[in-house]
Length: 536
Image (cartoon, rainbow, N blue to C red):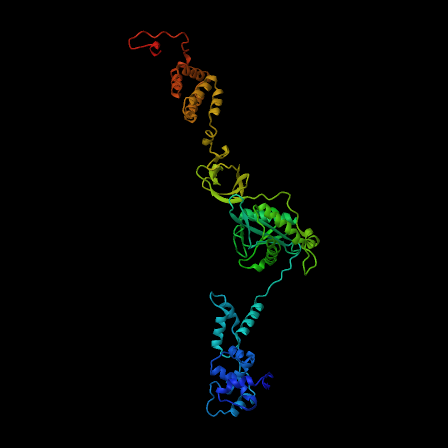
């Protein structure tokens, strides 16, 4: 048995005798064990790990032997001339040597932090560059540990302790749930919306088909209805549907999102881009929902959004009623205790979803909204107006004043027009129809009404007789009603149902001559007239 005077380890000497038989290096009472790692390293080129496995020594012991050899200048094998066994053992064993002087100059950590953000740069590369400038500097493990410590000192986390009723944070989970169409078998990923109150961590979750503006607004409203009150602020992500321009100091909300906040009398606070800590409460709630709700639904198949939301609602009750480990109370208990009374009351009416858009008034004093044309006052031709569309009403605003309102129609490419929006010259022709023209003619007399009706009946399309009928009605402004009645009667008798005939009758005064009402004279005989019997 041999005791290592450097490490205190006990080893069998016969293990080393066989290895050193060909090296001619001997030393009494086992002192040769100090130089065996040097021989394996420099003669056979083995690594520290390989030497450690070959000799059944720890890597620390092998590294210590090699360090002492480097300190003694024994870095080649066999030993240089002038080194006998006694001198080698004296240099390696009995001489106390220390670690080499180490370069304790630390790297420029701010520079390292900036460089690590560049694409393709790693800590290994930065450490290699550091060691190239400081060969006796620190190792890679120390380099990583000190850099992590520097990041922790410079990136201090702010623990935001929310007051009761102060904030509700909302976001979408990254995980989705597949919805299967029972008819087409098409799979649609359902988006999971999560909302959480800041003080009590009271959580709400639901599924929607998309993250578009209608689903985003609907989820916000359902979350407020679920908690039964309104917080002073809603902290949300910079979702494109709700936030038009994501500026930290002056974010621009979509008109619909801003209208929702005004309806509930709350404030919308979008977070900074790529700053999840600004809404850390809901980030944690998303993780909890994924673990305690979505993970439990992973083996179920859903064929409708209603079934999925019903399953989420059942598990949500268990989530809010389960006691929290470090608090000892459930989320619902804390909510009922400190936060329910701190919330503002919900408005009496439900928020009506409406989309906003801008439009320019066409030369025919109509604007286009959802592929349908709606009229506005003709004085706004060429102006840009704001349009608010709900599922029932289309409202048009100019300079923040409502100038028109229409019932929304599903007819595409149709026109919805109000008479008051037209110029005076257009209003006269606005409500023209066969019935309206006949009714106006009836005010003059029955013959005039009958004549106007014949004007439109004799045409392939009634609209082709509108202008002639308007001409007959205009004669009532130049002639007395009795004369116009007589002229229309005469025109009907002789079969001249045109505006020109009535006008000529009035000009010639033929309306004052009664038409002949006696029996018709027989047709005189003539060789070219065959008579009615010819066609029998």
